[in-house]
Every structure is written in structure tokens, then in C-alpha cells.
Length: 356
Image (cartoon, rainbow, N blue to C red; front, side):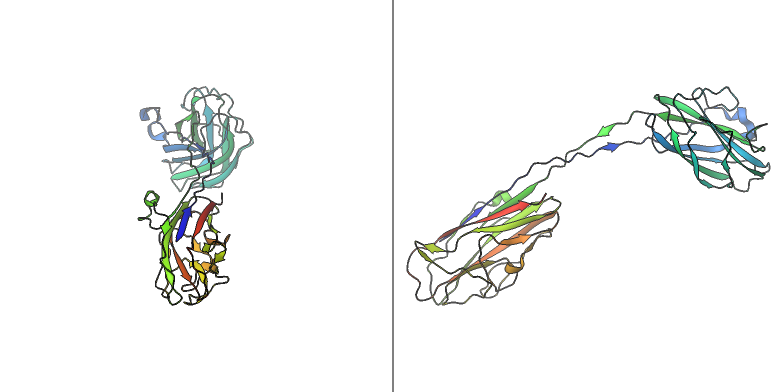
């Protein structure tokens, strides 16, 4: 008579994921087009890398030039707290600072650098004046400190023929931006390990694991006795899992059936007790592992028609997270003609550990 037990292992750990929302500034045309007539820069946008107050941000500024007949020598980008209207008095946003900015990328109309007359809220792009040949332009600025207060602020855009943003502008337009509070979203992804063992397990449902007794019947030196059982494991542990075996060979008082060490084939008439985790043909017992998981039998228990039993052996393992994986354990027992009579039994436990 052979009894099987099952051990379950649980762990407790919390993984907290934090996600910070980055809100891109909206482009809003706040000044009626009739004010600017034909001098309006179209498709104006400033995409901020972060809207968090006082945070260093990257500004990705783009617009469309509609006057392709007048030479452009400079572009003024002015950041104001009060309104987006070019030409009005500008109140710098509190805490805003562009003095450390760099022009990291430019496309469309190129050849620009940052003019020395730029300051904390004014960026002047300068070049030798040239008639624009490309309508859609894009300029990326790094290391601009956001305003220190929540709310809306504005960017004013103007193009000039002069290389220092002086004189009469050619075209202009405004952009509205905003600083916002960041918010945190947290979720718990608990580590888990599910393991069960039973004579039978229906599908991958551990709740059906409720039978733990195997009866091999009456031994004979001319016939191999065999049986099978099942175990199933799943875990999200980063380093996978291992399943080991614990117990003794079949024993009756002081009499035992010899455990197979190392692996050996089943041989009627020899004293043998062993297991493997494969489909076998001699005898015809067992099945290969099934399920989407990656766990595999250990080498000593992974050869069809070869059996072994050593308490403490790892019989199956995975090196990473393991989806549902079910193993069939094949048991074989043989006796020789000198085996003392008696009722031979053992209790075997399979121990599954997750490697977090």
C-alpha cells in the first residue's frame, strides 16, 4: 500500500507600481484670426514632457509658416502668465526659467542657434535671414523649468527678418499651456504559488485534488507492480520553482524494497522501487508533462522506462515564472524471491518551493 501526501508553499510580498501621468499641453487658438489676418502662424503646438510644477521639462514646439516670401532671421518664443497675445505686455510665469535651455533638435527651417539676448522667459532663435522654403517647422528645447504655480500659462511665437527678434514681426501666434498636479496610481501584484498533488487532478483545477492513497495490490516476483499520480504547479516567481521529493522506500517493519539509485529500468524478479515523470512503455504507465508552463522534470527523472528514488531529489523545476504545468508521477515496484512477507507502505511528500 502506497500513500502520497501533498505540500503547499505560500509567500507574501507586495510589488507597488507607480505611474506618473504626464499631461501634454493643449494648443488653443485664443486670439480671433481676424486680428492677425494673413500674419498668423498656423498649427501651433508645444508638447511638454511633463506638466508637473517646477519640474525640468522638454518643450517640443511646432508651427506652420504661411508667408514663404519674406526672409526669416529670428524666431521669438516668449512665455507669459497673462495672455498669449504677441505684442502685449508680458508677465513672466512665476518660477519659469529657460536660461539653461538648449536647442536639441530643429527641422523644417533650420540653421538656428540661441541668441545671446535670450533670458529666463524669452528664447530667441537666430540665423542669417533667409526666405523660408519649408512651411512646417519643429524645434525641441531641453531643461526648461516649469512654473512653480498650478494653472495656465502661455507661449507667444513671432518671426522676424532681423536676427535678434527686433523690428516688426512677420507672423505670430499664441499657445496655451498648463501645469497640473501629478497623480499616483498604485496596484498590488502579489507573488503566488499554487501547487497540489493527488492520484488524479481534473484539468488544472487543484480543488479536484482529493485522493491520496495508492494500492499496488499483491506483489509477485514475476510481475512489476505500477501506478501513477499527478501534481500541478504554477507561480509568478521571477526565478521559478522547484519540486522535491521526501520520504522512504516501501517498508514493512525492518524489511524494505530497494530504492533505485542510480536510474535503472524495471526488472521483474529484482528488488526495486522507483519513480519517473515521463510516459513509459515498459511498463506502460505515466504521461509526459502538459500545460503552458515551462517547468521540466529533472534529468534523473526525465528518461522514459528509467526509474529512480532518492529522498531530497529535485524532481522538476523551472528557471522563470511558470504557468500551469501538470506532471504525471509513475511508480514501479518489483520484488525478488527472497523478499520477506508483509504489508509494505510508505508516505511520500512532494514539496514545491517558489524562488522569489
